[in-house]
Image (cartoon, rainbow, N blue to C red):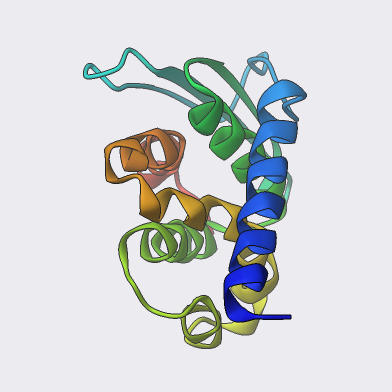
Length: 161
């Protein structure tokens, strides 16, 4: 298989993952009595997202839901994020969000980025590789980052262990 054919197959796979998450998002809603809740808005395109988080007795993310009005990429990013962060502590969430930012904004090889992160972040980060397809559409970077920034805003002042 040629490199061009492989790139096309990966792009199509990533598009399918984004479309599946946008059409049938996971973890939709707002938690009753969350430990933290935050709202994010992209005034340029009108995307809006609310993230609500509940912690378990060990102070890591037990439940996370999102409510969003926006484009397919923004909704897919939020859906994928909620799946990836369950069971993580605050510092892990920051590392994961940084990895997604690097996927989207840096031209580094994805394997290089994955190999540069701690092992406990590697698996959740690898599940988010489909978001890296937005590199080809710089105007859409904010669509990917809005849910992540909203989650960071939610947890940054919360007293996690």
